[in-house]
Amino acid sequence: MLTDKRFTVIGGGTGTYSVLMGLKKYTQNITAVVSMADSGGSAKKERDEWGLLPSSDIRKSLIALADVSSEDSLLLRQLFQYRYSSGVGVSGMTFGNLFLVALTKLLKSQPKAIEKAGQLLRIRGKVLPVTLNEVDLVATYEDGSHVVGEHFIDEPKHNGKVKIIKLTTQPQAFVNPEVAETLKNSDVIIIGPGGFYTTILANLVIDGVSEAIIKSRARKILILNLMTEFGQTYSFTASKFIQVLSDYLPLKALDFVIINKATIPDKILDKYSRLHASPVVNDLRANSSFKIIEAELLSKKLIKREKGDELVRSLIRHNPDKIAKLCLKILNLV
Image (cartoon, rainbow, N blue to C red; front, side, top):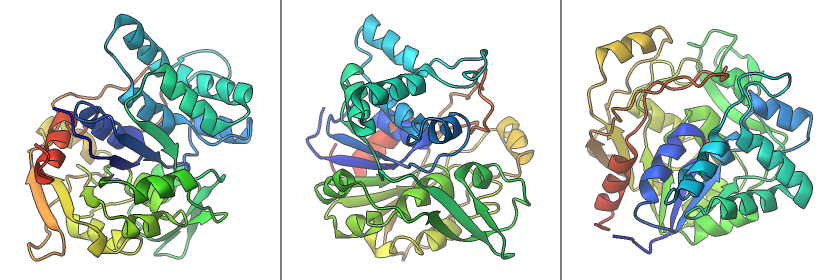
């Protein structure tokens, strides 16, 4: 059953991918608002050599929303996912990223290239960069140090146990006008899951985003991460996530907070322990201004590293269908 409600998903990366994969079965009115702060991997080449906004998270959202109803559409989706594992200058990059670069050069507009790629992939909905400004994240830590760049925050060279006390951008960046309009007209806004500072807050620190969320009459849902992250959220509990979020978005703006309660297998926990990561523990109080929803949301699919991919990736994900059904259920849409 399809709903005509308008959904906006704020994030980027694999967390947003999971949410979009689930939602597209129930609605065609989906907009993915994607962070433009990525600075690692192919993003560095796109930014430094070609002067473009990073497109990896754009590509992931396009793939998530892509049509797979025929062999040709499935093949095109697979082509966008294809990652080169050899070749000077292209090893580690995906065909989809290179395609978006070429299309931008042809159309002389990155937003137009994203829109055209969406048409070619016959996506359900649309994908929008949160800002059209070139931007870097700047993290200030409790020891007074600063780190510039999403990649170096996400994969720290420093002690990843040191807490971030402030996240800003360099230079100041402003919300994409189309994003502001979309948020205003949304019926449902879903924030997360994803890298807390480098994906979720990376959107909220863009001038105008939080304001647009607050003003929107949409129902607002926050999906908490499955695991903590060394360098970003080391030893965070659910309440710590919420406490930090409140510095960037007033908690009164939230209607629901969703957290996983499924048990994570020991063999996965062992691997995460080597990365100094642990499951996010629910210590939220029932008298919060938002409703707390606990559910078993863990996908049973184990994530394998792609050949040629040098970045650190999550080992487990949210189950797309469970996330979508839960969101629809709590909004009384099913």
